[in-house]
Length: 333
Image 1 (cartoon, rainbow, N blue to C red):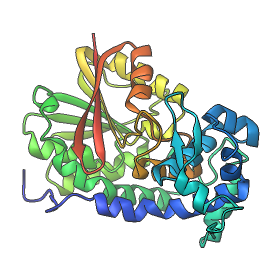
Image 2: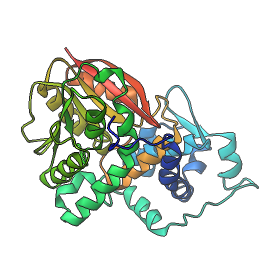
Image 3: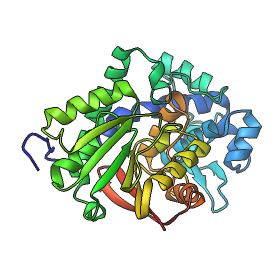
């Protein structure tokens, strides 16, 4: 890998935990105020039943339940029903002598959470409305995401799945960090970043800074309705599916299927929710971030498998990638 592309000496899990961990306390405080724990002390409910009982959006119900379970305050059974755990009963049930009221110290976040539980739309949209922002705000967001993804980008090319990839389309590629990291490690790989025009300019600048402008180029297009370059060996989505609802993810998967050669692969770089939907904590915290800022959530491998198989992909699997991340892989027949 060229010296110009940085590689950290250790992974960045502690930084993710610190950054996204800020969503845990406000969510637990809101769950107390909502009366969620008191209700679950009287009987287990699944996500749909919680959404109906409290008249809240389904993804808000899931975010609250997964966060609470990841912290050990709830338990989930094999039918997907959540009940108060012994820890939750001791410290979050109001009649307990050990009840500990949580106070959301960040009042703005607390207010945003309250709004998110009454609306299906994001309260402070980022990626899903990026073209509507001023150029300065776009640059600020993309540069922040660049710093977030750079450590993972430096290691992604070590995965064997890229060994036979010559042409890769990086959809919603943002700053170009993942494409540049891959191209820096794999000298025969050509990457094309597909994103909106202001973001493409930032990505092209970064590719030039790393000396990769000859193997990392950009195409300005709407990833839902624009024309995608075809004949790809692989189509990569880095932190894209978690921004969107399942229907929108299905549209992206179908577009990827059309852009791939037979036998080509779709690749999703994501932090996975586990199959029981009770963690891990970092996925729970990121789902709260998606609840506030985007239209999606953190998905499980089974949920990704469903989306991708409906678009015609087979052999869905997940490989550990870097830090908290996995690479979800499926193949076009």
